[in-house]
Image (cartoon, rainbow, N blue to C red; front, side, top):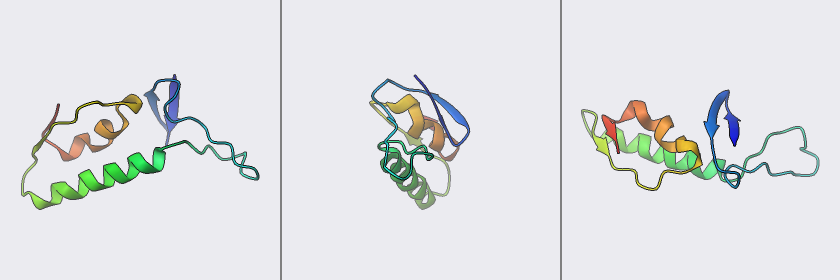
Length: 80
């Protein structure tokens, strides 16, 4: 299933980044677990500041269209 997040397209499974309807906020596109993955991205980005050069990252079990790996790709030398 194609999901558009911040004008970027991600191909996800049907049960990933599901729209969460909240009464009174129907016009907003609220996606389940997006905040969680944004925090993971922030953590992994902050960890790169410890090193003076880009390092490799082993990221197993990618899901949600590779959202995390795509968002942090420029911060790491290699993501496996």
